[in-house]
Image 1 (tube, one colour):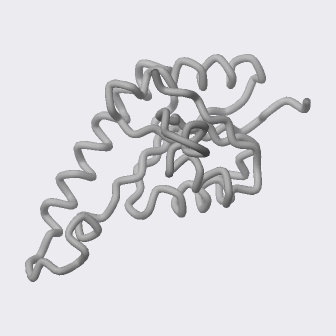
Image 2: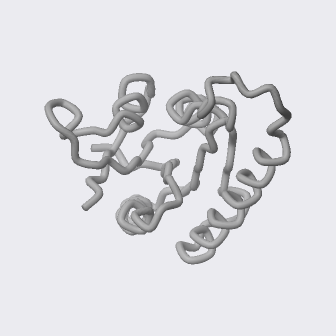
Length: 143
């Protein structure tokens, strides 16, 4: 197996994120790889199907700001430079695919919750990342 040089770890900023970050940090350290933290904030309109006739910009901005603050806390704790902490808005799978290509990632690490059937192996986001990313994908099982 070739050494990884550019690793993206996509996290959801929950209390489960350290399970993924611990393994991602160990993996990137073992390979001497650059580590980039990514969190994708879904557009507020998605939650309501875009049917709310009001401006949700302020709410979206607040969610974005809170995500940046929380990602910075994880970045500081895991020694990830601010330039390698990315918060973006969109569909998680699509944004992770885009960032993996833009960052020339050779490994994307995501967390995966237990599900039934094929979903037992990968959650829906992890599954979407796996099937659209050109580089390797490592799913860390969340316990």
